[in-house]
Amino acid sequence: NAGVTQTPKFRILKIGQSMTLQCTQDMNHNYMYWYRQDPGMGLKLIYYSVGAGITDKGEVPNGYNVSRSTTEDFPLRLELAAPSQTSVYFCASSYVTGGEAFFGQGTRLTVV
Amino acid sequence: EDKVVQSPLSLVVHEGDTVTLNCSYEVTNFRSLLWYKQEKKAPTFLFMLTSSGIEKKSGRLSSILDKKELFSILNITATQTGDSAIYLCAVEARTGNQFYFGTGTSLTVIP
Image (tube, rainbow over all chains, first blue to last red; front, top):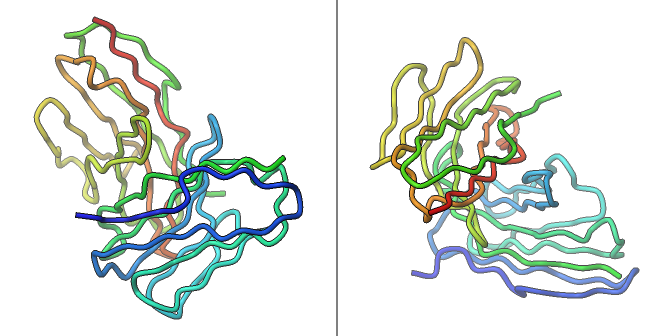
């Protein structure tokens, strides 16, 4: 049972570099989410998607972009990395809104 | 501004103790409240609550929602060291499919 798979697990970026965090789910879930978790701050929603081709901003979208070309994949793009984007990023998916969300194992990103 | 507040921020108890974790919220167009347990990595789902006064129970864990007073509690009885984790409360709003998470309660159970 793969569930939600995120890659990479760890990454160090230099200021101004770009990268894509990958997220794939094999549960045929319509809803997918990207969160960041900072120490002592809880999870903050970056972007979400309610289905292929449909994305929308969450609480903290600045500095990020997403796309949803397939049901399975929901990559998160950082165009110009900044130290403020140092965080742990979680991808999650759910079959219906309001239902149980399944989380990936997280990506720990450090921007130096 | 929508927000979810959890208390206490951290808690240290001995094995066998009973703990109550609190979650209060102010979220426009409430749809559901969810509890998660986060150990080293990803949060794992515990409960989803949508109706007031109906207790959800799973083993030693139970939770209840009060939509009038806008809070939920998570009870853990006869705590074990394996219960040590951060417990997250999240509230989903009907508009925007957004979940608002609290900062979590860090529970440490010592033998």
